[in-house]
Length: 161
Image (cartoon, rainbow, N blue to C red; front, top):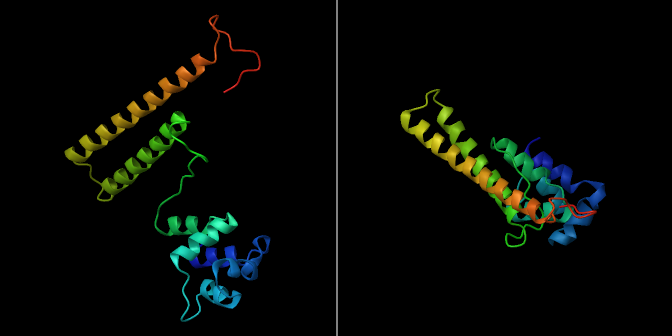
């Protein structure tokens, strides 16, 4: 689905009130909003409006269509990610970002069908960093698990993470 189709379907989804329900919340008339997502001459849906539409509806079809057209993908981050309160979730989020960056670099390196010595060295280094991050996360998870055990190695009754 292209971006304009995604915007059209999101705006006209009756579940969210359609264009008539969304337009006033965006400070527009429903006619103008409909023309923007229809791609009518002289009308364009702006990025901030596209963002607002997605936030108001909870429908991320526009984002996913943009990513698909650009050959990218979106990875949802954990909700309510507060690094101090949830260091494990923060580590997982950073690892996902690092992995995505590595895959992007690798894809760029593979375009010409040849991997140079410098490219291989960089890929090996980045993989090593990612493996180290995974090991750090595993160490943290093991410490969280150990904190749930009593001195006898048993979990407390009804205990869960």
